[in-house]
Length: 557
Image 1 (cartoon, rainbow, N blue to C red):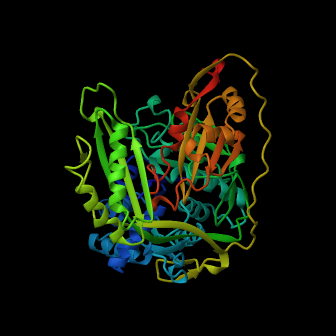
Image 2 (image 1 turned 45 degrees about the vertical axis):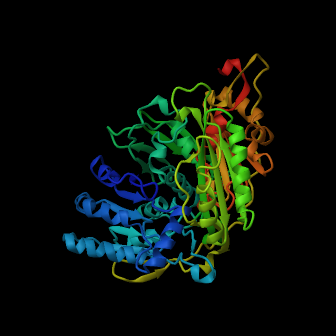
Image 3 (image 1 turned 90 degrees about the vertical axis):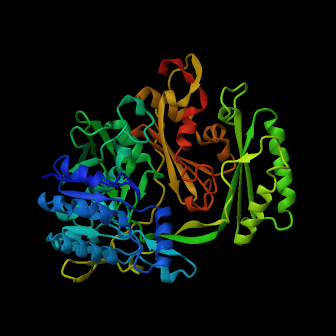
């Protein structure tokens, strides 16, 4: 008995017609949509400040208007976290839409994640709920289930638990569903999108993924026939490493052991995932807190031709003097050398000097900066111009996570008939601890080496978790793994990526995936919404690492 679960959204703003593609492209039982991220919660929080009836992903409603009839005809259930900060509001809007279209659907929603009232000063504070509220809604006959903040994997564990009748203590099965959910949650990242070895397939328009889930928790990840992209062990490995930490991947329903997962190619565009073991979940739930951190402004100066360093020094000194009367709390300069000598276009002859300022007071980063920058237009370096005029200063967000006891959250399933059902929190829990470090593989025999980029023998994927970044690195062969596990230590990582030099870098080994996972603490400051870094979500940190040169054994090259 197989349950086919597909995904049609990896973030708020993903491909609009993916829902139709997934409903018409092949067989499905359940279609999920993930619309929430740390930054999205801040955006929805600001929407709700303007309109208390807002706070959910409106895109989902527009997609559903086009596809609700298709889902009904094909008996495909839809499960989504598009409810954001207002799942009840979205559920009502779906019922109104269905009534207008004359389509008989049963709508349920999950709530209880909103803890904002308990955190004065927070714009939004939401606990990450598990999948059993979703399971209760589906068991009660819901065709569409809308949630607020649940874990991304809960969109899969909930339908799987309902379909197979899993109990809350069947941890291995739940762990398998968590792994499947983690692979699906970012949509086309599992089918060749954002993939280190993207040139090995046609990824101009990757299809969205689906998982064929079995009763024992194992699954096969694939995609609809004829869609773009590709699914292989590498694309699935990359997504498994994305935004994770150590071997224990904790959630509200189960802690999945990533070090037990086995991947194998099961045919073209089919990867089998099996062997996942699970443990009791932690006694606490993660709560994501979003608050306004202050105001931010930036200006990018274009420096063209000769004397780039001197030009940068001049404008820095001029603006420093202008801002000295009321200096912003945080001032950051970055000179980006995009220029080339003897360039044949003006753009390639130019470098960029970026100034970013932050302060709790909008006035300190608004007109104070804008006026000072624009006044230099005729009084600074030759060729003075900016990419865009600075604005008045915009608010920026800060994300942090705290933890509360599972029992402190009123996880509630609101069934299609309006019945409110409390979801019992996990009864058996296990305090989360780091897994024991596995043994290293045998090192490769000594031999000739050649200076070359790491990316010739290893893939990588990176992402953000609050202020931390993770970089997953995996080898494509057993021989490359034997070299990588010994060569790429935490100290070597810091050498290759100097921006991590003064930070805590923790390395985790995952031998069954031939992978290392590095967690770089604090590199993203106060999270993506604060935009404290050039790459605020660490999306390209792994590709920077792959571009760095090491002495690599010639046998691997």
